[in-house]
Length: 268
Image (tube, rainbow, N blue to C red; front, side):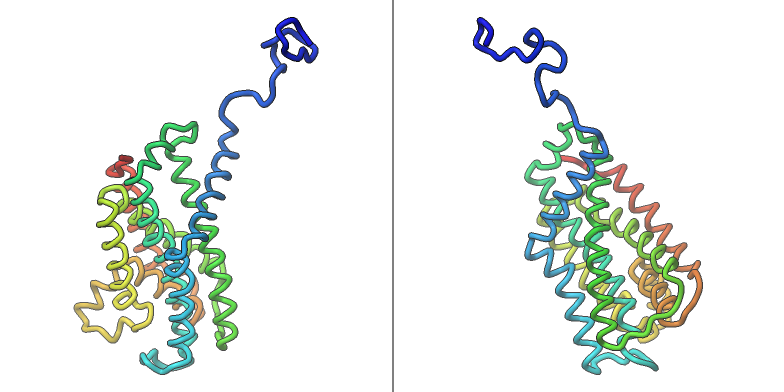
């Protein structure tokens, strides 16, 4: 013991290496991983978000595959429905769930406090995107297992499916963050759920687009959910290669959505 009552561990008090851990920010990669893990845990613990992202797509896949409610054309209903439900899973997580969660984080000052931490704002958005991707992987695995149990017979190149899902995630994430960063939390909650329901009906997820009038089909075909569901269906049901038209639509929505979110997102 020294005269001051502190322990001398081989050097004068305050000398380099005397105290551990050292003060200061953790490495950037570690901060992003920690934040992404936290975001994923919060998402999976939220009952409402879990209902939206997992339960609803699963129930829709099982119900409409087992009961002849909607005319899905020739072939098994599950072959038509599964690509659309996969697209719906991306919509529910990357857009609806992320918009609502981020909107309320913004309202309660969570984003403002995180912005004052050593974690850069772009790194926070990166962590949120990683959380979305982890959740989507869990969704895709679950829905794929259920679809196979229902008799699904997929075709096509898995790399094309991955590319469609990644571009779809980017497009919906940009739109979700744009909504969360510009509207009040309550307005985001209402608008995100309304958009989810409208796109569920009119986005080619369950009801084929050819069931709508010609002029309406042209408009609906430009929506990101329509491009994602149709692209996945072309690959998984019909064995097509890269659906360049659908990929182009998703790329445009991704650039516009992420660009607008970066410019207009308000942190407070």
